[in-house]
Length: 421
Image (tube, rainbow, N blue to C red):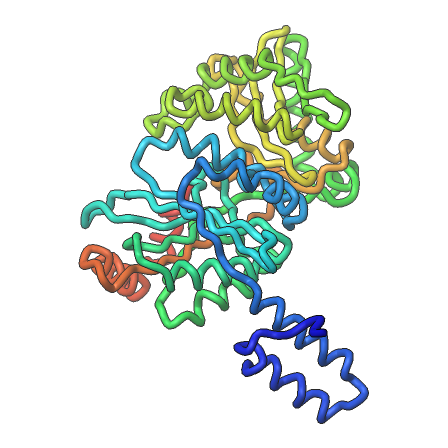
């Protein structure tokens, strides 16, 4: 009776031959040789199932949740709910290319791609990328082995029928554990990927205690903070409110009163007048944020912070929380207030409270504004990897521009100006 057999293609592969070479050289290490052989056999049983209909997503949600919980440095943006909510609110035509990586017919990774039309100076082009649209600085595969999932996904995209003009992988974190291997996967391709910085996000590593963090700051930093806190306190009665849901104990109240207070402050902030339309109170953003708010509350991934002056909201910091890491999504302060230090005082209280709660990190989002660098001297960079299809004339025009750009004076300055903030 045959209990187990390998596929013929594997018996003829380098993994099988490598096993016998190893056993011949080291007869006592047959066990290790079998590990190589079985690992190769498992990889031979891997395949990619591609989902193009967002309506099929509910069939995979439980597996997605399990893998998300095991993904290193996972974020709220990598949940299936994020994809489902933002997909229906995206205003332009789009095509879903959600790659499900299967091993022995069981999911070991999810890699969400999408193809969306984007306007360039040369005209409209189809761009394949992650469905993040700069809501956050970093993104990647969902799964235990993100590097292997990334490799398989890239091979699949480049090998399958082309429905894109540009492949634009925008959110690889340069400081992540797997970045060097991902970089090697792309740079060793026969196709040319152009590498550019996309954004910088200041981060506060919450190692040690709050007292140790304060002790690392300069005397001038501590003196200025005390002065700003005193000036704000002189205006009236200050109250700091922070709220997180606790699904494990059944506490999932969305606290729409706090949400509306954040909205109220946003409408009085300078961001409300910005032409970008990305403020918390923007008509284009508000419906998406409200629906995502309900999801984040159910999952215990919401972190709302509001500063009150005489019971009136004057500053807010609206965050997402995942794996004890805080991401600052939107912030603002009342521009009509007599003192402009409200946001700084609120951030001071948030950092202090995060130390006491045992958070690991606070990501202040893209942009290296002075108030961020004041609290977060370190930054993490998101890197763009872009490949232009040789079968599109407009795409090749962009490819030529990207190739010539580093050869012209002022390249580093141009890269800095192009950073998303």
